[in-house]
Length: 627
Image 1 (cartoon, rainbow, N blue to C red):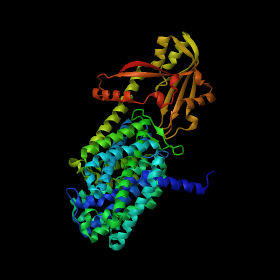
Image 2 (image 1 turned 90 degrees about the vertical axis):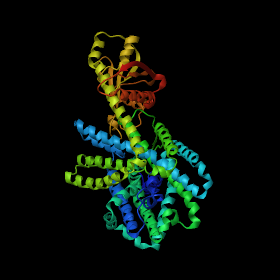
Image 3 (image 1 turned 60 degrees about the horizontal axis):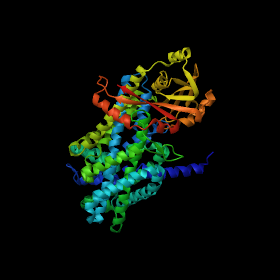
Image 4 (image 1 turned 30 degrees about the vertical axis):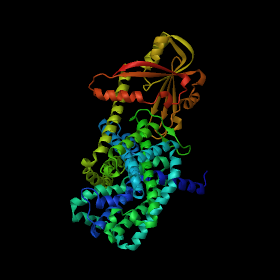
């Protein structure tokens, strides 16, 4: 039994690591948010006391409403046994639809669209963060301007390369830096507020309402820049599985939120005294002697900002993979104590290439600014809709209670989303294109996988009549055990038919092995392996995994012994069907989508690697399948 002091130490350690992984994106927003609102874009807000107090009020209450209330207080409670993110909400919601296929389809489309928006944000955030970091260095060293793009690409490569070392190591390195960062943010803001404490009036939401009353259209347009203060909020929920709910809530409530509000209000106090400070209100909060150290610290902090969406992308991808929305991929566990800390090489390097392409294509963080926000706000809207379904169906809330809360959330989310849509002509099309591409791939994989399974099931012989026929006309039986892997436990695996057709023999023991993934993080131990004895030394074995479980069939099949099936590892062969897919014209799925599915199917991780099968005990039997 762990001691209270030991638990506190562990919580403190995880909270510190979470600072470096979860809060990097939202924690670096003060670098550009105020400047973007008052001096950038086609509709900058004019500098006067009413506007400054109105904008500060909107920022403060956006942080409170979107992050503290929506995500920290409510959404993070809607976890799938500890796992967070849009796919966790999707799994929770679908679980309660029963046999309502129309409802299932609608929720599935919403969830996948939300995941795609998160991926789009995961590509844009590292690009704009690292670019702004390197451009910040140009303030001190203008001669390095021609090297901005090459140096950015080098930094990005280093950042993505470091992911393989594990979230815990990355967080342990970044955590102390971000602790210093938030401490500096709060201190600089507090010192400025002391000089002009009247800025604290902006904590009253009336000032934000008054800002809209002065010019409703300008107020609406300004929301497209105000939303920059909450970019990264979804990462709090998506990365919850890496550290747990408590460290994320503790870090946000005790440090991150106070530091952000102090800094934003400090910048506002500075602008009330000196409108000229708008050229760079963040850096001008610092005394002259501190400028160069601040540039270095800000550069490091903006690089760290990429970490939240990268680790979030791993969490979302793993859940999508286990739930059947992505093809098999290699997943590495980077921590023995925190199972949620993972590394996915294919996702990591794919993200890196996409981020680098944006850097090369847009060339500056200013050009990318217009693309920032649409993916985030779109995800926020979808999260609210799915959360409402979970609150009503799973938590058992009444219609009015659920409707009122979700209406409050959506009133903020839709306002932000509508304002960011105005950015589409200036670069907002980028996340939309990224989202559409990923959405197409995920839907194509899910649909193609269902069609292939249906096709193979329709072609397969029923297992029980086949076993009866074997009993009446027994073929030669050879020593040993054969495990035939199949997704259909009631049909005869194609690999078995090919083996019987060509080799004219069956093993003494024949095991029909099916692996299933549930929408729960972990399968109960008593349900991990289920054995059913059939006639003539046939067995049907089902192995159940949760979407956070690490598959290891040789290890888990040892549990069969307790249910009467002894498996000698040195005398057991795994037979795996290796289908070669051929696309045919059919009304169920467009031909071009079938071609995409076949490409994804070929690129999937091998079953041998996914389930940790001993390579020298695996027999692959190929066949062509037209579907």
